[in-house]
Amino acid sequence: MVNKKPANVPQPPSTQSTELLRELVAHLREHRTQLREEWASSITEAQLLTAMTKDEIFAEATSVYDNYVEALATGTFEALQTYSRNLSERIIPRGVETHEVVGIVLLLRDVLARSLFAKYHGDFTKLNRILDAYEPAANRIANTVAVGFVQERERVIRQQQEAIRELSTPVLQVRERLLILPIIGVIDPQRARQLTEQLLRGIRTNRAKVVVIDITGVAAMDATVANHLVQTVEASRLLGATVIVTGLSPEIAQTIVNIRVDLGKMNTVGDLQGGIEQAERLLGYKVIPIAETTAAA
Amino acid sequence: MEVPILKQGRYLIATIQAASSDEDLLQLRRALLDRVIQFRSRAVIVDVTALDVMDSFATRTLRDITYMIRLRGADTVIVGIQPEVAFAMVQLGLNLEGVATALDLEEGLAHLEQRARSSS
Image (cartoon, rainbow over the protein chains, first blue to last red):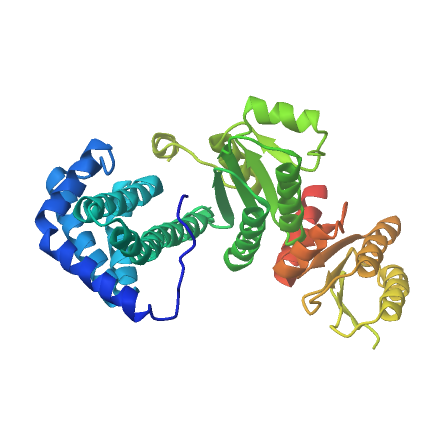
């Protein structure tokens, strides 16, 4: 990012630069309509915020502009911070990317700087002093908005990760004393641990004798993951439950043989159906079509 | 504290206490080997529900007990391993290979009944 470090962070600006800023703010307020339109059109030209309609861009541009000027006028950034957080909350679900947000804020900075050039090009010393006052504040604003966006995004990602993790380890009872544990997606050590803990708790609360672990949805398996699986099977056995692993794909079967993980202690069956059938046999169930039972009776 | 051994029909039931020391476990091993013959027991159930940690010594002793009892002509079931204990054991690489395990005393008895039925 091209942002300079935000200068003069806590201390209030000197009286002179306050005056300059006041003049600057007056200028920006005066030319609000024109500058805003200029900015909105340069956003469209740069093909930023493509997920939003023109009207939406203009509406957002207006409020960003006003907040921007407000921050320049007051020198406080709390309102802007809150606003940028709200804005991020609204636009992140629509797929707006970080570079777009940074891009539009930098565009605004450029548009405003250019209008300052146009206004003061006759008086070079004054222009210099105005820019001295404007640039640090503008950089800090750009920083605030970008950081606000990134933080909000990270929060959303964290939230989603948690949700996925919770959803991803269901332990389901299909018959009395028979649990199934479908595993989908990537297994990392943390998830493997959670899986095992949840399964062991499930075994105890449901008093399960047989557990079918279905790994049809696991794309790849390496030595670490295979060992986690072996550990899960071992731990379940210590609680007196037999584990049947189903849905090993040909690739996974090859990997397991190649990395020489000892799966000898593991019951494996081709698919989930076969696994459940074997589990039923172990538990002494027999599934008979209704027609046959009525014929026998 | 000595581990108490209860006789229940043709089964022996030993409940290990939370405070059992290594010495107590060795004593349990000797006592079980004697009683199995003395009472002509068919099987031994070792209940470890009270243990919240199972170290390598305890694991090895339980495995040894199982193998020794088998040589004396009886079965052994370890019952009541807690989920956390089981998880810790596999993480430490401790396993009870060749040892029958069950959820609790009831399950252990059911397991032994079933085994007796299938072998007779």
